[in-house]
Image (cartoon, rainbow, N blue to C red):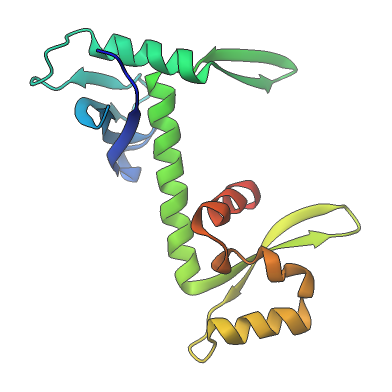
Length: 175
């Protein structure tokens, strides 16, 4: 099978079951077709990856892993002064999709109850996330006017008023 697209969908996360690794399950769609079930029991082991019985290609999991490594290359990080790297295989792609999904879920939850903005500490030249609790009588227009009057440097960096993908990017960076 020629893999053109790979998407991770139907993610379910079980926080209470997550000990050493995330306890979750998800479905991998290849070329728009439900193809692989992925799960982890949260006890520190690798993900379990199984092609659906209806899939005729029994090497599909291996092909998906190879495709991910080819498409996404290596993941590199430093720890204790040493540099490490590993292939971005299907497990890494699924974990990244899980973390993106969890971050997205958390951001949506916070945007319902707070106004989140990126502020800058000029003395340390650092940016960070600040939050204002939404109050019943405060509308979005009221808060925009508040920012214009009191914090004009934050007007363009209020996550509530940005496209969701941009807000999520800033949330991941500063939260």
